[in-house]
Image (tube, rainbow, N blue to C red):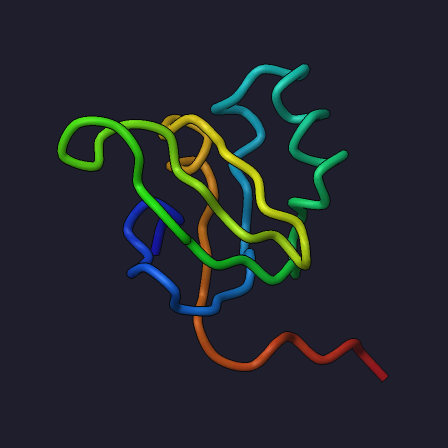
Amino acid sequence: MRLIDLPLRQPAYVDMIDWSAITPSEGQRLREFGLCEGASVEVLHHGGLLGRGPVACKVGRMTIAMRRILAAAVTVRTGAALEPDA
């Protein structure tokens, strides 16, 4: 499921990010905020008229706002975090 489709306040983990759908500078900014595969994420608020504006997300312990086009490039999954390979 895409991050923009995740219900509010439902914890999830980043499964995949379509880096080709966003610019390199936007991708670098997301990485600096800690948004990478395996990161915990939670949608807090959809801004704008009828919820069609930016998306406020909790990434780890930090709250960030991102454009909807960026949130659409992030695929998330609910449930337990991935276990590292032994």
